[in-house]
Length: 252
Image (cartoon, helix red, strand yellow):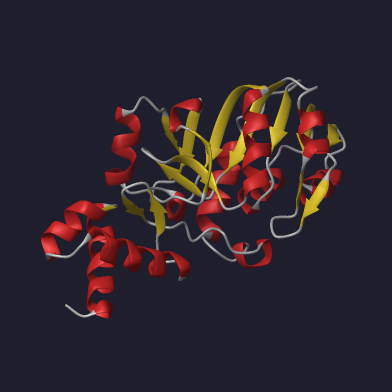
């Protein structure tokens, strides 16, 4: 089997099974694990999969810059945003992540909601300017322009001083084995800090973020209080998450 044929075979297995095990694939094709790992490295460099110990998982497509992500999965993100807005109760202190889905959530908040929203996203903070009864706490730090969020030691220190009732988390990958993940190391640290300071955490995930993984782990899926998805989320991906003990809620 030629190299390009092997790669297409690997991608077909990944699509069918949701994972590739290097040892098993090598035995199937009569090739060394080194050959399979080389193919996986090249496919990973092309952004077609995410390498993990022993093989590979589907790569998240949700690692593009913010401006590009704003035109992806728009209807799903609107549904998730509307459902997430209903989770915020009057008087609560709520962490709100950066990202296109949480921006939709802000747009669906009741006009007279009284709550405190803490965010490390200048975009989210600015969008909340239209909500007169919402107290906005903006977490500073180094601006990570790819996602338009503040990261770094200053952001982590500020987060450590706040206890929130709820954290609405954005992720680029939700996988029953690989857990919650994102495409940047410092973003992963900040998300983990927010998770640790919230009484409850709900991740908002459009279907392109389910069953896939990014390079930087945040936490196991069981660290969540719930996962919010849309009706188009494939049951084949959701069922293993439920079996693992994760509460999965569907946006109407």
